[in-house]
Image 1 (cartoon, each protein chain N blue to C red):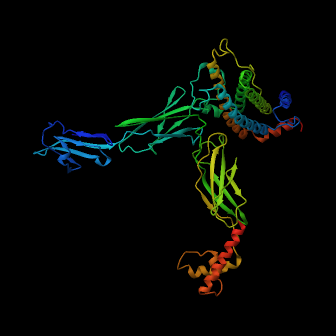
Image 2 (image 1 turned 45 degrees about the horizontal axis):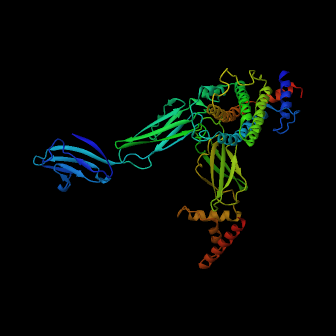
Image 3 (image 1 turned 90 degrees about the horizontal axis):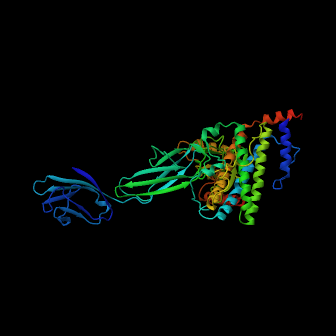
Length: 219
Length: 335
């Protein structure tokens, strides 16, 4: 049905990304396998981010690159999707809600990161950011793949960050750097959270789901 | 009436005999022993450069009547140095605990106050009954980007001091070591040891927050450890153990994705299965029945070789030692 169409499209899109290894689009990825691959991607990204964040914060200069830097959260920073969640609420999320939260968060974080890309200082930094963005895009598509293979609809909504008039551009250089700092912090926290989200999903998705879907397609 | 007086080590202390005049005739005692008049300035007691041994009960009696005019308990001590504070989450995601101690004793009573600030909110750190210098906090939210700031203040009669630590939720995650580590030989497999363990009981949710493990093992006679990292499961079979050698084995745990490794578990010892030499079995039974009533000590196999047969006297000892040396050389060759 529709989900199969979306899945083929996503697969084709994934295949076209230069930063990712080529996928065999004729193989159907079982839901369990996709979750494992998505989990692995979050770990890979988390590792990449450590180096990237270190370099970028050094480029921003002090106090942003100081290890104890612990600024208060400004209202404008609330635009970046936060991974912070109440413990019981997090535990009780349905698989669909859990995946959707991840999908929405990374879609928006990717947009913000791409905006960084254009202005970053050195060529090396821009190159690293570009590479990271490609990998992050791969994660978004991977999550979409898992959702579609489980039969969940992809969350709809604005692809970019909602921009209330007047607050989309930071009024001064320091506040712009604060925005960048919080973006990287939230991204890091999301990647830690996603590892836990996908751990839960790994345990909960039964192998039977994969078998049923194969039968539905007449294999 | 009596009270307590706290003074710093090295200070000069002047004690007045209550409301008595300076020129009144008085006698001072320290823990019941009279104090020599050389320490008096009129009716005041002067203690210069006090040290810890001078702590005790000081009493002042009126000269002739021996009425007790004043009594105080002197406690010599120090103001607190900067305390040592540490916070750790061994029960993620439930919460974390903080524990503290003084780097040097003060010799007088101290009180501790801890404050935990997260975002703009002050969180309550519930003091543990045991150990006393510890308190725990429940997480209200998970996956927070804002650091926690914990400040510990130590106060006593002579001063105060404090220390602050700041950390991210993920940085302090460190599980307790794995529990119930068991290592057993595998029958008919002289190079194997089967090791199993359990998740630390303090880790509340291994389903959603799985642990990975690190196993290390070495024969007692060698210093170098071998390591195996296991991302799943609570057992492992060592397949490259040296035959007949006693091994020491330990396991550590870590959250799969965040935080640091636990301390090493309690060490367990095990020796791989070895085949019992068949011709000695009956000999062993004979030796056992004859010596069972005298002692419970079981001689090791090498001595049995020497016991075998009708070899007696000092010559037999020489044979024993040679046999032992040959076996040792043989064993070294195999290592």
